[in-house]
Amino acid sequence: MNTKPVIILGIESSCDETSAAVTKDCKVLANLIANQKIHELYGGVVPELASRAHQKNMVPVVDEALRKAGVRKEKLNAIAFTRGPGLIGSLLVGSSFAKAMSLALNIPLIEVNHMQAHVLAHFIGRESGVGSREQTPNFPFLCLTVSGGHTQIVLAKNYLEMEVIGETVDDAAGEAFDKVAKILGLPYPGGPLIDKYAQEGNPNAFKFSKPNIPELNFSFSGLKTSILYFIREKEKTNTNFFRENRNDLCSSIQHTIIKILIDKLVAASKQTGIKEIAIAGGVSANSGLRTKLIETGKQLGWKTYIPPFEYCTDNAAMIAIAGYFKYLKGEFAGQNTTASARYRL
Image 1: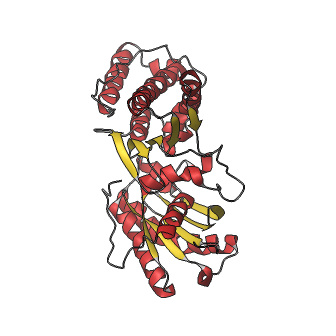
Image 2 (image 1 turned 90 degrees about the vertical axis):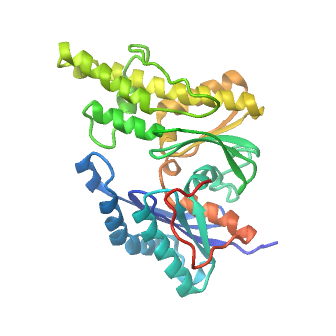
Image 3 (image 1 turned 120 degrees about the vertical axis):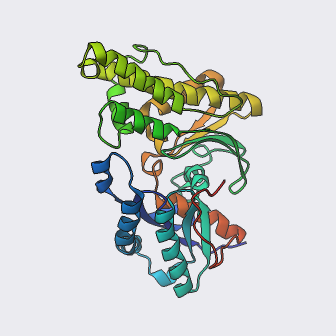
């Protein structure tokens, strides 16, 4: 069994954030993220601009992560990178850099599934005194993984064996938040703004129908369309409808999306008999979802787990942690590996 500390450089570039992290076993020594503000001008992520920004940011971010961690590149044991899923141009920048650096240093290369890394973010700090067995899920557990591009219920059997038992058939929950925010005229990214205004509103002020999707799958495209038509009808008679009802409207929309998510999670728990329940992904930073998970957990006897805010959104620390567990198993990639926009969990 390996007894020496394992130092991993993690690289994340699946969408519009260039991130690099350095970990020693499960302890994070540095976790840097370079955001791309340019997308705010277009109301959403522009793939070509994202990949160009990654090319500009990659070297400075990795260099600063190593500097902040106090680790020379020669001390690295391996490099972990996001193979997918994500924007292909962005993924190619990260994967190409990781492959070149691992080749130059002659150290192992580890490919990581972005969604698996979100789940494993719960184990950051577990063996460093920051986390504990009371603060991290026990296997098997269910993880509701919600982000701008994905919505899944994952059955985690161990660190590396996971099964998707429910997922969206169209839009992701985070995408629904941002698209609805755009309908309302809110700037990008609109999801956090809906959350902010929702805290001051009445969640029962307006009713929106919830889709009837079989089994444990989700759908948000119909809800998004119904909200669009609702706003259009209201503004025909009152052009100030949104401004006059902003908080109540945001609260009602958020309440509906969260209810869809939690109802499916409840169904998954009943179906599997598992009461170890976690959330992960960018939308797990939503205050309404975090509160509802805790409330539901208390009602149903769940043990609930919510990651710290800094590990909810895309970050390289979760990539490095996933890489650490794969390193222990000797699961390394070759130089012939390539980025995959639809890399399945």
